[in-house]
Image (cartoon, rainbow, N blue to C red; front, top):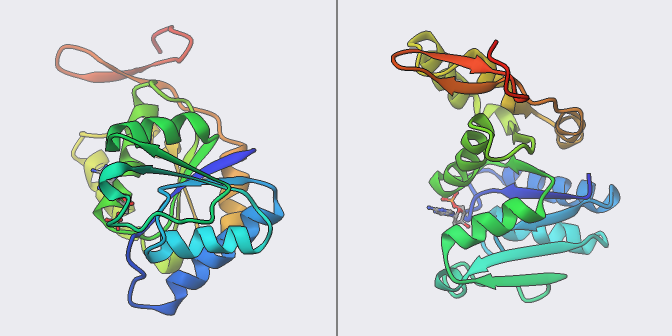
Length: 202
Ligand code: AMP
């Protein structure tokens, strides 16, 4: 894996643990020579993550839309800062540049970005692994929501395989490196089934 996009909070959270995990993640990426692709800001744990990669000699590409240049305070010391016109262009650019995607704790913006990658994998528009760094059980509620969706038949159990979840960044990256995409979701008149990515219905 050469590059990884990380989505995470533009806030710092209420516990020093979140900054610490962002810093550990940054150091790990630098040590593994994995380039960080992220939103390009200085604020929150986004900023702490980018600073840690740079501090440990790693490379960081930030992708920031003009509308957020000032609000999220663009980082002025990155290896590359790509300024784009729209939020959509930012996500498209990050999807192109990264080999895999990870969410660290964050708010609605973090989930929005992660869920686009997850759902694009689900319908086959993207085939790149994604996962949650489950710091202190931060994302356990998402797993509960998925269980609920599967139980109510609004989500296929296969889709769970798309989104890895680990408590340590090294284990998460190992899982993402070994990722094999599950069967592609297919839609039929009033029921859904799966179809193999090669095209043959299961
Ligand atoms: P948050 O997790 O809410 O702190 O936001 C984290 C990041 O998500 C920030 O860099 C935001 O710019 C970004 N973000 C917020 N809303 C969106 C959106 N609708 N699409 C893409 N990125 C977003």
